[in-house]
Image (cartoon, rainbow, N blue to C red):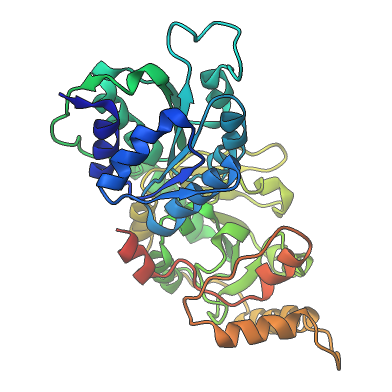
Length: 399
């Protein structure tokens, strides 16, 4: 038997958690000491919301969840903002909050709010820990956070657990793999794609999150078609690729309608409606949705095929199809790219946004990451900035 805080930190480290973010209160000190002894960084933030944001980005960059913490009441409510962001952006993290003891849990007392009620709508699972089942709770928390679709989980840590002993767990449970799509669903998708003369491919958040650039390139070898990207999928396909058509919902995206309106079928690859519903841009043609989760369409749009399961398996299976003889004019697509780029670079003798981006792009390494705050300028950056955020090498490093 060991102290609760030691088991808590040890088990998270066994699951690959390497970073923690937050603002400590007195009851959190035993956990910080456990981290210090194990050389696990605890990064102090100015506001608990930032702890959630940082844990969110940690998962995006490493593929492994991080820990974020807030104390009673306002610490937890501040943390909820960052956790809610991770929930909508499909990022796995472990959110821990200090809570009142069982004896005080339902009393009216300073800073006492129901943390489980607070986090339930913005997490995949919320639980109040106890000493006897802490190891299995953490195992379930990490598994729940990381399985498709990834997202945050919340663990409430009552203050009276700090001095309790708890048993160590055994070997880590095996990770749950995403099931492959059914052969029937793959066949239905393939049949519709073969019949299309002008298929359009829309690539979204899931494909980017899973780093499926290689599988996408293989698919484009057999389905020569224009590709539009959602903002979160920016970088999955090089802007110089012959199929690249642009980024939806960013500057100049109205020009993408010149391409999308020519399609007779839309293939959504990893297209997660949490970014934008299909209906926000879809031409009036059937949709083949290929993702780890289902999607919905409202009339008059038609969801002609739904292929749900391991996305990489889906792409690789479709990539074995015989090369399609599509009717797309790729010279026109090249002119479209040039026109889009020129429209966002107005002639000026001064120093404008596009010139600033050119200098930054020339200065940063090819895998350099540009960050920006919200505002209209993000739409220009999202369309003009050439990047490969989710390269195969990066995916390999994330494991």
